[in-house]
Length: 283
Image (tube, rainbow, N blue to C red; front, side):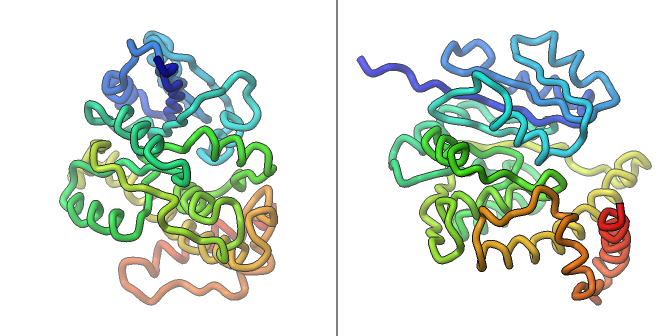
């Protein structure tokens, strides 16, 4: 009999006391082959306390930042070993059977570095699923990396910039290039997994809290837009070993080239993003 596949699930959560319970309830907590870790980063609420009430391992770090915590969990925490590494956002609910489906997808072909879960709700979910299947992209809400690829990541010394927003884009690029520059790009190294899905809480535009969160999210999307331009240049040039410790380290070189997009949806948020980036560069 073949030994069971060992699966590590990392739930990355920042101020998710409202959603973390539902997220954890959607995971196979009783499966002995699945080790669930909740990575709490910079939270000021009861996220860590709620997680500790469940059968999970909690890592509660005071510093915020999803990319920073992703690095600390994957590279700096002893004893995190598995055949499959699944990453889940703390505000997502995972549909039944998803964790197994991701592991089966990775096991089907040793050339696959990552498997992508699919959005199951929201007015654009069907469109997103079609785009992900066509482009072999992944969402940060739910995806899996093979243990072989994680071992290669650890040996390479390549880490996510600590202040990166939209870590899924860079992780997808690292998976598709197999840690080389863009000359090594192979879409087939990410496999969309139809059997794996996630549910997200829809935005309630009638709620002041939800509106405030959406406003901040839009600024983050704009920062991500400009950061992606820098990351793309690095990946097309020297490759991932040249990624900085912080994206802000490269801002002085790039900010003079950036302008707000003229699109009415993005102009204001791009202005706010560039102001934030200038402040980070000066810090």
